[in-house]
Length: 272
Image (cartoon, rainbow, N blue to C red; front, side, top):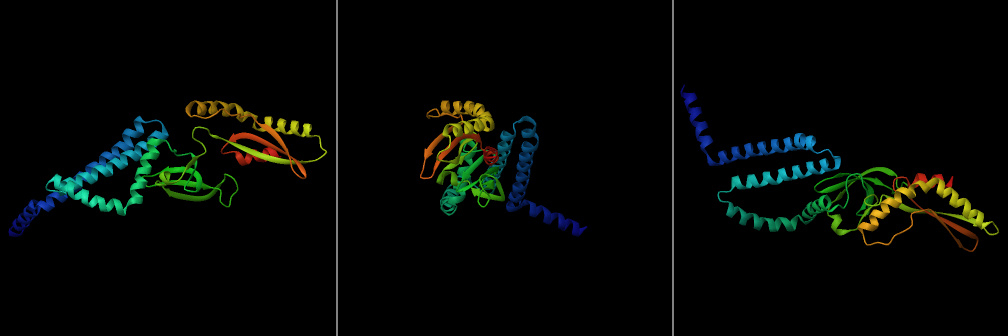
């Protein structure tokens, strides 16, 4: 009986310790915040947001907000007076900001990507010298399925690349698929002197109309939207053939628009 009494007294004294009380409060608070974040991500967002891209970004925002609230909660519980905490955080923040410039820039880049429409998951982009398809946008990094390098044109090469979001402020972001999901491409064919250049032009134009003419209809509508949105001159999206002379040949160049994912396959059909 005496042992139980001593144990009970020890537990009461232990629980009455302010440090232990704060630790318990922090643990319970973090559990509640985690449960709320999980409920919002798995139940509310999945049930009420139907668009896949919007649902993806909503999950990211909820997760980031949960981390932020948890940090504020822990800081407020462990501080006797919040104003003093603010001063301490300000002093510490100056040093942390200097030491973690790249991390802070990446977080700012993530905010710019989400709300500034730099790119979305599924877009084909070139970021920081790396070209690929966006498969994930994290708080610190964008994950790409890389294209090119030792593989010609726009095919996947199998490497997954994680690029810091801070690059959106440092280098141009090339987006192949945002407002105008088509590319202009060209092929050049040499024809020897003395050939019927009119017939050569006609053959090339007929082939272009047959193989890539269908893109012109879709591209024309997309291009009209671009012209309305930006200060840009109108341009022809129909296949065109031009000719120049060089020392040995008549060079015919076929210029056309094509879906950004089908550039290599389309070029193969044209050459065939």
